Image (cartoon, rainbow, N blue to C red; front, side, top):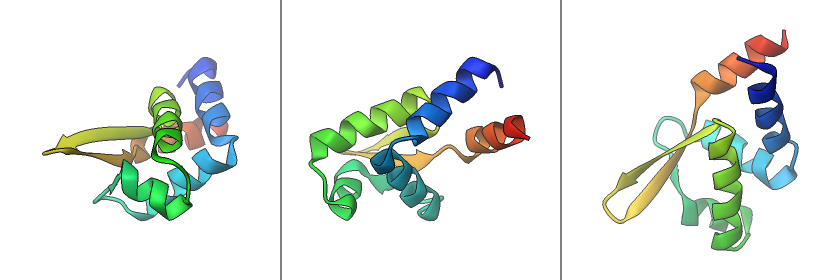
Length: 88
């Protein structure tokens, strides 16, 4: 992992809703969670959750998969492991 990638990931997690979202996704591994369900769990509008998920995805911390009409989001634990190892 390079400095720029680590900075992007850490910056994404430096916001409370995104950190809560990432932690929820980690707890729901490996099944993942739909964006609407995440928004409901955190009591925020769906469009706000979509923006947070986009930020986490750009940082490489979240991956998504279309299943029928829904998009399932999962924490990218391999990327998070790389970030953790980079930090130590």
